[in-house]
Image (cartoon, rainbow, N blue to C red; front, side, top):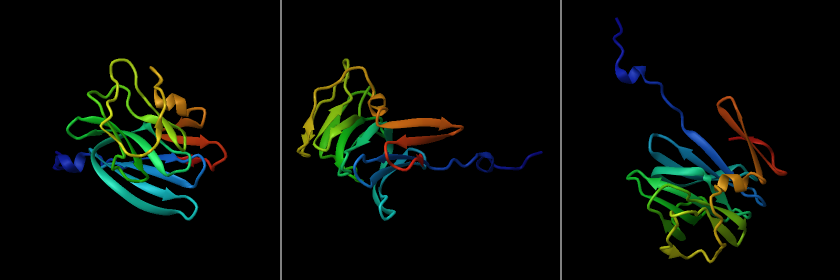
Length: 179
């Protein structure tokens, strides 16, 4: 007969970490997911190995629909609140406060990709277009591409391999890191 409680039987799930690297700087953003339905954005300066806690969000950030500007100043991310409201935002790293804000009515597509330090694409397509509510970054928004997720656009810059339960990213001239 087993006298363990339900909580003792449950396996504790560790936080999940995803890292977005800037192409031309030592900056990175760590997206820390966990505990359940909570996520944190953490800045990482790889030059001196220092960390800056940005902000916490009750909800989820989708790392494969997110990207950093090449100089590491901005990042674009796709998120969904714990109430189910999705949006895309451009913010200064590692913070979540949206300089450019694009709420959506569904989770199809969303997010984006930086084309340069001064411009980005929105991951739009079909009938699920973003509507712009705030535009304060001063960055240019390039014409949309259709039916192609930002992850596949990032592939030429980054190579992702799943090894067992771990993902490894091999990116350009940077040190290969487990993510």
